[in-house]
Amino acid sequence: MGKRHGAAILPPQLLERLAAWATPVESLADADVVVTGWGTTLVLDEETLAAAPRLRALVHTGGSVRTIVTSAVWERGLTVSSAADVNAGPVAEFAYAQITLAAKRALGTAAGYRAGRWPAFGAREGADGRTVGVVGASRIGRRVLSRLHGSEAGYRILLYDPYVSAVDAKRLGAELTDIHTLCATSSIVTLHAPELPETRRLLNAERLALMPDGATVVNTARGALVDTDALVRECASGRLDAFLDVTDPEPLPAGHALLTLPNVFLTPHIAGCQGDEVRRLGAFAVDEVGRLARGEPLLGAIRREEWARMA
View 1 (cartoon, rainbow, N blue to C red):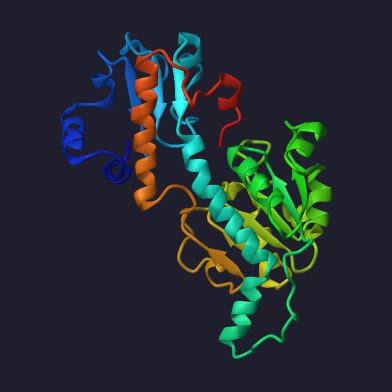
View 2 (cartoon, rainbow, N blue to C red; view 1 turned 180 degrees about the vertical axis):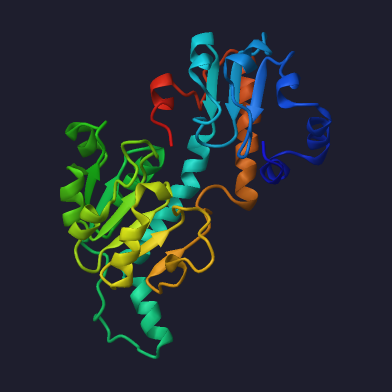
């Protein structure tokens, strides 16, 4: 795992032991389980697995294992587990908070306040009855759907996800629809889909143009889901607002237009576990290895078909 994330998850004495190993691949020769984290360069391909004859499981303290796991892992029959569920909680809370701010038109109101304008009582829009479009019923997406469904605001919730049926969407408290209808109808669009070839630029210029005047894009998923240039044009015109925890490119270069727009709220990919929250990931890994040793079902088990659709 990367040094910065490892220092947050593991105690110093264990980090010293890890640093003493020559290379990650050499350390796998006698390993039954490998534990990885954000920033790891390990790739479990055929060559690496050949050097790890005893290896039977991967436990990842981050979310996606897409850059670590290859088809060779599944062909070998290894067990794969990820802390994606653990990390999903903070991301969903962050996204829901931004949806709430967007529903209150907080960006525009805050800018007006700084300029000396105090809105008349009831002059601003509230959250009640607003339509929120959720793109992706992922782990995070489902948590956001649950929060929206339980809100006293009475949101109308639309869902776009090609892998979800209308019946399942209804169970999640949402109406299943296509991406064009979702964009054209929603005052807030929140993204929770993985970055795949078919989802890159999912919010392109055409779909952004469909969104109502004054609508907001919330992105805590992957920056590549949005056509950045098209979003800049829409936000620069004042027609759309945006809350972006992820961007494309990431990080943004100095002087990028998104950094200058007052109706774009930017954060540097902080929605997931931060600070003390990161220790949840280490605790999960320890508990998961214990379950593996005892022959118990793993809480973070990843199936091959799920891996293929991971962010």
